[in-house]
Image: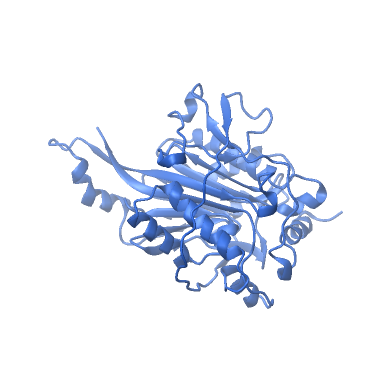
Length: 385
């Protein structure tokens, strides 16, 4: 019998193919492309969720692609399709960046010299009343776009994500190689994100422990499969993020990329991944980041379908144009995803994936066709009495 590590290696290779055929599609899975929203009777989820299409408030939308596992909750849930149109931005300037490969857990605090607290002091006056009794806080206004691989549009692909109550987001990418064993390759990712939402609800409102959330989600996800994962929460100290594998996020301020979560992989194209049970990479191997933020900062999170095809400057350029145009987070996410899909289908352009493949000794050029998930969060200030 193959060891768990060997099985994951085979699954990873099957999911992506050899490097020469990295753009080849995975076998379709059985999952449907649906959004999961909180019903009005589900008081534990906070405010009633709002639709994201048409520029309406996306901050309360809970957008999981898939549903809660059978018997996973007795809460009231209802389902809604969340298809959206896709914008096509123009050609943007491209710049290579150095890939960073992590080999284990490495809790890290990142400092940029401007903390959320100092930003509050600078901007909080506009929200204070004459007696200075108002409290300054930050929230996430988020929107998302999910583009399954073209050959998996009818079945919904293998990525999953959620947006929760102006405070937390999460993304996961199911390992497609499981399809070769007759397993729905996206179900593990969808269940993982569903359990992550439940775990987030159980956390203190202003101090979500994302490591504990990931551990609970992993422990409660029992279906066969494996997945990368990234969960980000806004806390009183800034953002706290936990990431395992090659999904991740960047933090943008004033048109510059301040921070990029590194890739975790055992070998080229073989990433860290969670799997049911204790014989795989564990949540304890994930990297944890605490990053100070300020009003006006922007988080762009995505699966490898985003980061394999766009450099940091590509993403930042789209964000800058979107902010200048006054676009909402969902529209910004759509533009980023559309550009990533365009680059994925371009065989004549250097991409982060082709750069990494060449550095690993492979002859490869062009994009890498895959599921693409993008979640964009605007960090915004507000005051409460």
